Length: 318
Image (cartoon, rainbow, N blue to C red; front, top):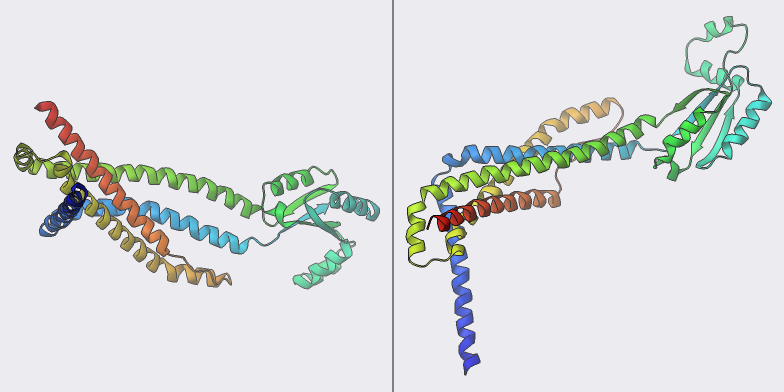
């Protein structure tokens, strides 16, 4: 009998708990809807604070996509000194081919280089005036895929520059490695910048909820006098913070989407001028949900900090 009696009591308590939360959720939304213009400035600040790191994330995402599309296996061209003989060039080719991280080395003779130069340029008449062939032997070094994608590529190019008979080292993908290093630095900067703006969101929402609590201080005192718990007093303000965070995140997504839509035609035209079909990528569904979740959680935390601080001050005063 005791167990049968306890079950309805638990169900009744659960329903009361659910009704209390539903009331807090909807009542806070109702108060928000009754004074929408009073909260526009706060929502604008929240939207910008969430949109800026989101745009930084999207910029890095698009740069990684672009660099990934361009990261084809690159060659290293070794221009030997003009006085290097054919036999010495052959021995250098064998020496370089034996180095780790290299999949192959081909040699281009001065005659081959001159013929290629004649085909690619319009300076044929000027070349006929020359008494001899000024072009040196060239070793074309091909790195293996694993080396090219790692930091070993930069070290290998540095080793090739140390060879005495090498006059010039030209690495076709060196700028891409520098770009990847800059992107790694930018990614850390985005995280730091995002953390600072998340703190800004907490402070803005916390201050907004603090002002709302101050405006309802008499109501809170009356509710506390009739025996309301801390959780009951705190609940409507937590849901207010929830709505602030959710609406601010939604507005930030709208700003980011508009920015991407405005930039996409210009970026596509620029890419087309370089013979590329690259287009800007927007937020995926997972990223959209992440922005909403982050904004909502920050709003809830800001409200929790503000309401808890008020309750502690009230208890200390009592």
